[in-house]
Image (cartoon, rainbow, N blue to C red; front, side, top):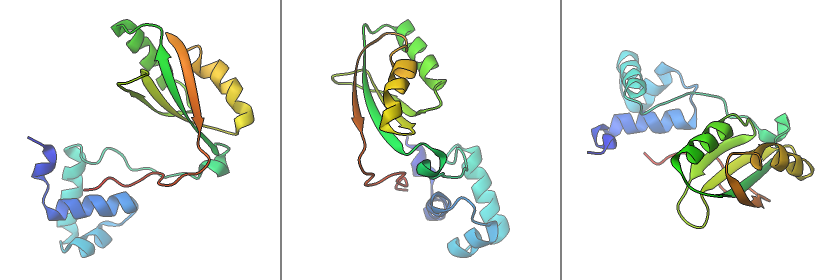
Length: 156
C-alpha cells in the first residue's frame, strides 16, 4: 500500500502550503485549509510524526554564499562490491560540497550533484574530493550553465 493513499485533501493542501513556505503560521494554515488552528496543528504534527514532512529549513541563495557553480558528476567505480559501495557512500556524505549523490543504473554507478564557488575551483574539488573516493575509476562532469527548474516542489 502506498502511504500517500492515507492522505486526504486537507493533508495534501497542508503539504503543498508548507512546501511553498515552511514559515507559515498555524493560523494561516488553518485559514487556508478550513480548519481550526488546533486541528491544523494536530494535522501538521501527524504529518511530521508519520514522516511525510522530514525537515523544515531555509533555502539559501548559492551565489550569495560562494557556491554559485553547480556541477553534476557521473562516477564509475573500478568494481562493484558491497564494501566498495559502503565506503563510497560513507566518504561522499562527508564532503560538504556534495548536495546529492544517487546510485544509478546504466552506464555509470553514481550521479553526484555538487556546488562549488566557480569553475576555476573545480579541478581542486575533483582532485581533493571526488577522485580520492573509494573505488573511483572514471568521472564525467557536466557544469550547469542555467537552472531551469531548481528546487521544484513535490506534487502532492
